[in-house]
Image (cartoon, rainbow, N blue to C red):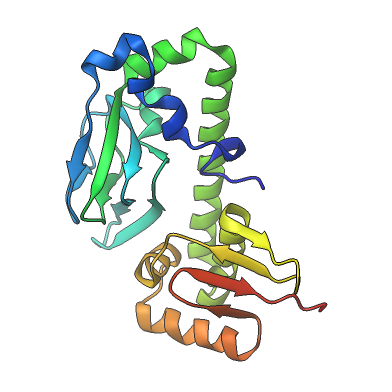
Length: 223
């Protein structure tokens, strides 16, 4: 599996959180957020990166018409605000908690740069992770601009399969156990909840997928 949000299947929180490093333990803390709380806004100073200990965070921006565009929804173990590592001085997006029990580990950019200087392999993996993440966001924006809603949903389901899926040995079906609600998925593919429900049920009737709140099954057409 080659996930774009978890490089080499490594939970970033377990590798980066400063409480793991003696030199940074005394300055380390966690920040707690409730649903709809903002971690940062567009134009805020970009002097930290963030790791999610628990909960979920929505990353997005507002277009010229004032409409919200959701770029990503992240969960436990994932990193955001990483463009600060590359020299971004102000945020070009917002980050908002969408869970009532979100806990965030903030890491100062200087701390992150020190950790990267101390370990070349670690530094390479961070840059690789950022590159993969940017590629994924670019593909998603292309889908939003040029593809119809059904195609966007199918592409998103196949992304989920790469990130969270496994094969069912008995049937050959792909099983996806994912952290997203239907509201999350609708936001990520630029669709309304009613439209999403209609397309999901069409795909179910066509025996392409089956689904419930936390699992999607992609049927093996060769079985």
